Each structure stands twice: as structure tokens, then as C-alpha cells.
Image 1 (cartoon, helix red, strand yellow):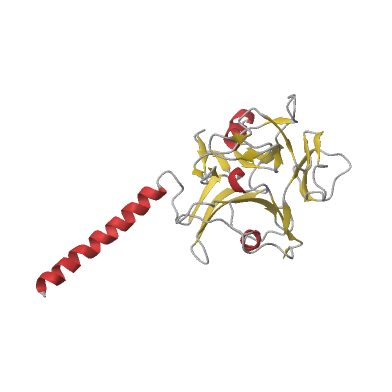
Image 2 (image 1 turned 45 degrees about the horizontal axis):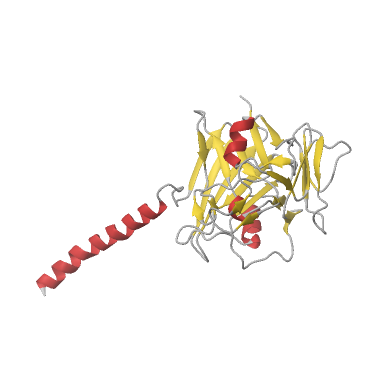
Length: 292
């Protein structure tokens, strides 16, 4: 009996070490699946939200306090390219090319296909066009007529004020998305509560002081399954968001920053063609310049 008890006591910690070692190797190269909060810049906070029930979900949240942070915004400018209004870029490429400090992916786009890791479109530099109404710096370059029902649209003024679905007299920046998640502080009725995917969203609080960016990792078993639209809306409401819109999700979802030392850092675990860490080239993006 003593030998059996000794073997059990030896096997227990060995099994625990093996399980944790395997999990460490599985998550290597991805953000640690533990809740985190720290300041990126003055007035800009990063939060990592980790849920295990009813499914594994890791969400990355940027909170911009417009009273404390000196910021301005950018929607990807158009390109002179045959066959589309933009050349496709990953979110990291957008961040580095235009010198913003924070970037997320934007609207859905066409053409697009993903049949395998080697048979996909677009590659970086290929011509694409956003699905919804889009403008940058006063230039409208996508009219949103590809959809039978117009997409919701975020309008950004020269003074960096954000409004949803209320076009100003003079368009400066405009970025469309998939659907509204919160309107007037209430979760939009009829949101799907069963299909899990990576997600991207943008929202503001009631008085516009706080701008919230959210990217949820997904399609990564035992790490993060993703979020439903209902999950995403509830997460945003937990951050006191009053209006919020979902952007393109799935393999497009990405959150990239320049840290205080000038290094490019991907804060989430993007996945394209079911390859963790692989960023998809997309049409447009939402970028944040952080002024000193």
C-alpha cells in the first residue's frame, strides 16, 4: 500500500506539470490567456478579458479616454489601383505605412475567397473595395451599393467626434461595418447567440468621452472559440458603451499597436486559413494617432 501511495503522490505532480507544460506550448506565441490591464499611452488602456464559460473567449479591449489622450483618427485612404479602390493590406502593414499607433481591421470587402492557405484572395497589394460607404480625409471612395441593405456607418469629423448613422453635411472620415450591436445603450434585438467567430467592434460611451475598440480571438480550440454577436454586444455593454458597431470579423480580425518604444506588436491572436498568428490582408482599417 505504501508503494502505491508513493507512486500516486509522484504521478500527481508529474501529471499536473505535463498538462500545464502542454498548455504552455500550445499557447506559445499567443497572448497569455490570463486577464490583464495596463496603460499603453497616457489616457489609453489595454484590457484582456478571459472567459471560460459557456465557452473559451479571449477579448482584447482598447479604452481611449479622449479627455486624457490626445488622439486623432484615420480611415485607410484610397489608392489609385485598377480593379478596386484600395490595395489590400494587413492591419500591421497599415499601421506601419501610415504611422498610426493603434489599428484594427475595418469593413468587409470584395472580391474575397479563402479555399486553402495557398489559394486565397486578396494577397497584399491586390485590388479590393469595401462593402459599405467609406471615406477618408474628405474623399468618398466606396458608395456601399454592393449590399441590398446599407451597412451601418461610423462618421468621424475633423474634430475627431464619432457618430453612427448620422452623416454630417461634410463627410470627412467614414467607415462602415457589419451591424449595430448597441443603440442608445440597449443591445440590438435579434443578434445571433449561437455562432462563434473572431470579432471586431468599435463603440463609444454616452457622452463620447470614451472610444472602445474590441477584438475577440476565435477558431482556436482550447484557447478561444470566439464570440457570438450577442456575446460581443454584452461585452461592450459591460464597458458602458452606448453605441457600437461590429466590423468585419473572422480571419480579418486584428489589433496591432506601436508600443512606447516604437515596436510593432500584435495584441490579439489573428487567424487566417485556420493558421494562428497569420494576418489577412483586408481593404480598410481604423487607425489612431496618439499625439505626445
